[in-house]
Image (spheres, rainbow, N blue to C red):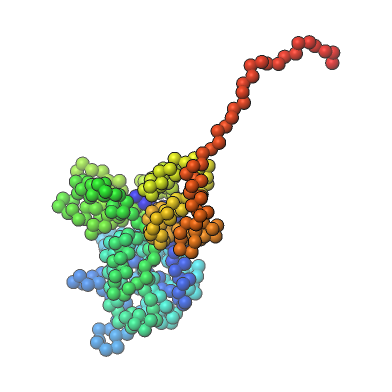
Length: 381
């Protein structure tokens, strides 16, 4: 599983939103993805607008940042932490970002893009609901048709299925994220991949719901944040049964939060090299002598031996984030190890060859001399 610490979540999501915002020529409105109220299965409009058929001009200065689904025992989900990231961004750069603007503020600030910010795009259901809520507003459709406003979805992590579901929405938003979320289908191969769902059904606390046993809508996301485990993860991880104790009871990760740190140890590196069929690299002595950055650069070079070579594929093979993949590609290109199409050069291949055959030189111990010296005669001082 991908375990995301609080600091890593905040810093990387903050940097991702800031980087995507720099690409927009104008002000950016930030919205924390949240549950949208529905009526007869249809999400309510994101902004208020008159009911008359003609001149349905949306009005209002701002939108609700956090929606409390419960009124008796109100609870806040990941949208509260995402809202904190948005607040920090708006305070650091008030001329660029505006938090949850309404139609009036969008017009006065000349907002040119709306960012829907979230922690995870799992099945894509909730982000599509939020996009539906925005698209139901006539003013938003008008701004989008005149190319005055673009819609974006920015997340910390996303599954392949969730990313595709978001991109297929009628709005056709630009989807960007920092990390690839592993799933049961992508993290396991062969028989194991088919056996894991059967295991989830066998120990599922809810009887007769095979599809959702591996996660909401069958997403099977293998990720947990320091602020909680999403419902896209297999249900046996966060719901208790008669004879089953979950790892994250009630989706709370407080008891295991201390291990939510960087898991990039040598064992993880070796397992990923094994998946890349680099058995000789796992046995090389370079692991004990190279730096942390050097070890992961070698994994990055090994992942480039075979395609595909785009950012998401490399991040999935190496376990690195999208930003780290781009940084390593830039460094390797500057050092002459990659060409413009991300193919290994002769110098890049030689780095892998040296790592496969390198062995530390044996240390020679001094021979032990049993003939001890001692004086045989004494001289006057």
